[in-house]
Length: 235
Image (cartoon, rainbow, N blue to C red):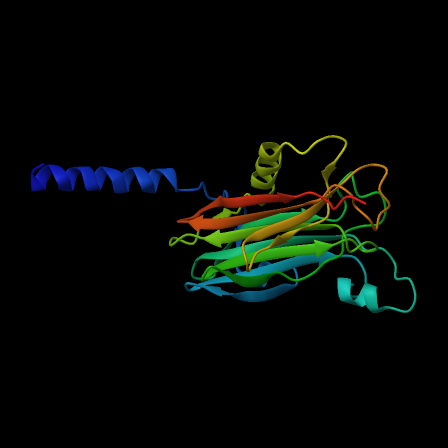
């Protein structure tokens, strides 16, 4: 093989890898300066791009998850809307995330999700924007999303839920067991761990074993690295 042919093959291989691992960015939402955001709070900076939470709510102040959990008496339910903005250009912040507690998941039968601030976590050395808002009255459920930023500031959402569902299908867990719907993703470790349960299980005691899924970041793409199912011990 000539040096020129070898170089062409190497270039095509790199281009194929770049295409294969190029995840689609989140479409930019409405853009505005910080002064026009509702109750802006700086989350942090990634590669020069500032990230802000913006929260609209009713009432004298925003009731946080910690305040609700620590309160000795019941606190009123609060309707709120959370947005995350990323700086695309100097003082031009564009929306990448929107969630309103007016529309809780249909599986969440009681209460509303409670606001919690976003954070920047490190996963395999890569900064990740994490938003994790728990249920007001049940910390076993939450609305969670994770984003990384490309070099141009565009956000890519990590497809944790679709990959978990794919891995669980491949494991072919026997009926009547199903994956516990509670959160199980650890963004710092890039792992997911959760129990399987049946409708007959008590809330405390799932009986279907556990699954552990390890992920890796390849470019901007989240991929499954390994998965393991451990059956529950027999009585």
